[in-house]
Amino acid sequence: MKELIALMMLSELVQHVTQQLKLISDKYTAIVSMIVGISVAVVAQVDIFEYLGFQVVSKIAGQVLTGIIMSGGASILYETLKKWGFVKNDNGGGQ
Image (cartoon, rainbow, N blue to C red; front, top):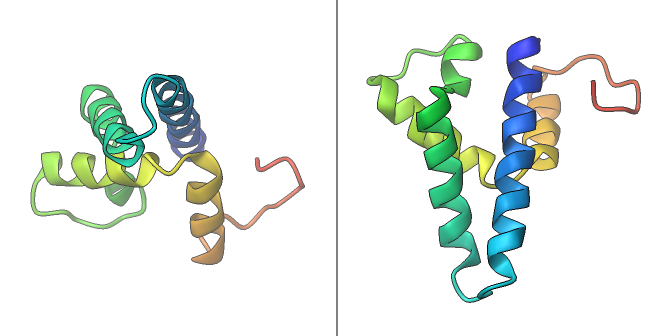
C-alpha cells in the first residue's frame, strides 16, 4: 500500500509542476504534463504495473507508461485503481 501512496504523491507532484508550467503557456499543457510524468517515473524508477503484479516487457516501458498515467494527477489514478478493485478501503480521505 505504501507504494501506491508514493505513486499518488508523485502524481500530485507531476500535476503541480504541470500547473505551474501551464502559467507560462497553455498551448502544450498535455505534452508538458506527459514529459514531466515520464521524467519523474523514470528518475524515481516507479512502475505501477510491477506493483500491481503485471510483468512488462522492459523496465523502462513500465516506467514510461506509469509516467503517462501519472500525468493525469493523483485523483485520476486513485479513481481508476478504485474502479478496478485495487483500492478497497475508501474512508473519504483517499487513504
